[in-house]
Length: 89
Image (cartoon, rainbow, N blue to C red):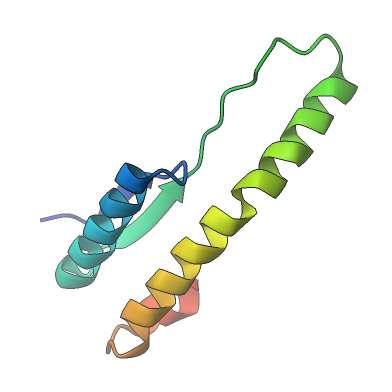
């Protein structure tokens, strides 16, 4: 039914619930799971250096969200027979 599932994650409680549901659905359907993290810029950057700085800060803020999502996926996949799932992590 589903070959690929996309879930958004901003680290909020609702996003973490959505991630758990997406992980369970991907595992039950044998689907690929892709996660996107999005964070709005507080202002419009004027230069490319400001964009790079904002991106670096956003990556730092979202690193724990991504690490937690990866850990949740690894826990689900570790007992699975899905070899491509383990290879993706």
